[in-house]
Image (cartoon, rainbow, N blue to C red; front, top):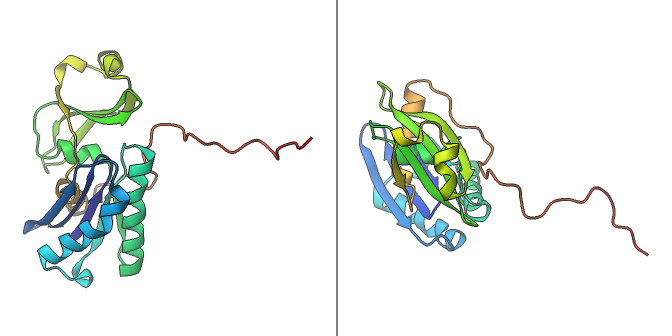
Length: 205
């Protein structure tokens, strides 16, 4: 049984169980309120599901791709909750949640802001029901997708405004069940930070 959190688009929190399915899910679509709502969403999901923190086996978290500010809120919340509860963190690529349950070739596109989009292509699902990522995640201007996505015309495009934490949690459950590797623990920002450290101390004249 997992608490699942994703803030790569809006903010979404769910409690899922491999056998019982989705026990609760709450979502805030506003991409500017991640930090404001994440705590409440976690409380609401746990209350609605009736699951005690001690009964959770871990915390699944979407690692992006997503904009820096929003994405780090969910990752920080997941890590803090997991640390306090003494549970492991299970990282999952956020786009995998959008492709979950879709058997046909799919191009998942989410807003990266600054007139760019994040994309991942999927060739379908494997026998265990997990999405098969063909390429990506990547970052590109929307008008360049046909040039940068291999075999672009073979995929049905889905522009996702939200990423379901419930789907993310179910992907994590299947990854664990079938002994598949989880995502990297590094967030998929796919873009250099706005602020970089200088090479040395600033010279004062």
